[in-house]
Image (cartoon, rainbow, N blue to C red):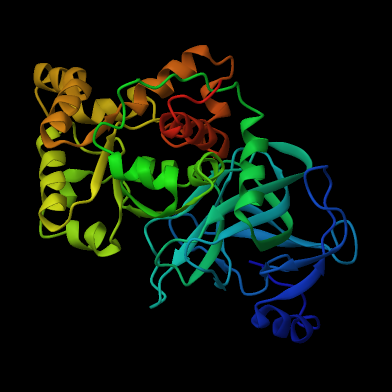
Amino acid sequence: MRCSLSSARRPALRPLLSAGIVFLACPWASADQPPAAQVQSLFDGASFIDWEPSKTPVPFEGDTIRQASGPDEHGIRIRKGQLMSKPFPVEPFAFYRLRFLSQAAEKPLCAAVFLDKDGKEIAADVYDSIDISTDWRPYSLCFRGHADARQARIRLQTSAGPLAVKNLRVEQITADEAAAWAAGLAAQCPAVQFEPAADRWQFLPRTMQRLATGGPLRIVMLGDSICNDTSNSLYETLLARIYPKAKIEIVTSVRGGTGCWYYKDEGRVNPYVLDYKPDLVMIAGISHGFDVEAIRSVIRQIRQGSNYEILVMSGAIAQREVYEPAYFAQKPAAVALDDMEQFSARMRRMCREERAEFFDIRKAWEDYMLRSYKPYDHFARDSIHGNSRGKQVVARILARYFEPKDAAR
């Protein structure tokens, strides 16, 4: 596998990469990208020096693109497998923008993966798919530094077709720049017309007061990869425009395929929730196994150690026909069907009993999809998870949920 530039260039480039901050000319090919100029780059991955190819589960196959369109452009062509960048520094809760030019025959994936103070990979990552294009096409992904992150790595991955990438950069940006990126994605989707219930927020008085009057508001998102995608929608950038006095921090506390059946045992509520000292806990996702009592147990454990407010949500985006059959395999058909059909109603009733808020975001998502003229693939990176466009739909549903009840439409 050829995955680096010639050795003659390495001595000149390595000091720039290790310095962390470099100044580079970045040519981009669309109006929403900056013109060729001196741009401060946190991480220059364009040369793909020190990137690590995968050996499993699919052995990496690829080669470098040398002087692809000019003397300052360098890239990589991945036929299959994944490639991981060297680590670069990030700050908790700060915003970053990954940019590159790409050609993709299928929908490959890219991700920002976080590392903690010990260099251990954090489960909460940021994944997106890259749209198919035969020409060089600008791509960007904005993400928030995880609360426990000290470093991050970029992952490129393909299994169904070649991916070519060049001029890769990561920059630290402002919340306003992240919001502008998100708005550009939302413009590619039908408008969200969700109308939230008038009696919402009954059990969120402190949260809504903090939003309205200002001050810090820390939200812990607890759940699975769907909860992770919901958090990665950067919905706080929308809330910041609605409630400019509030300082909102989002902590993503998740494990893939994991629900409250896991978090309720062995004291896990402490490291996954209480240790972050949130003001609001949002429990979300599709991996609770339709187990209302497990969610109740987590709520009660949170309440034993704090007076934090709690919002329980159903899971958006994932197609029911993909994740529901697995539950049928675990239970008698009649029991499984009843659990699935009654889950939302039972959660709503349980939340009322536990004085926790309930928001059926799944229904809001499905109503949106019924009105949308776009196919599911427009919003998703696979059969379960959203791409950045799908996440922006979720962000705007959440923004409508938290928007003042007297807001003009």
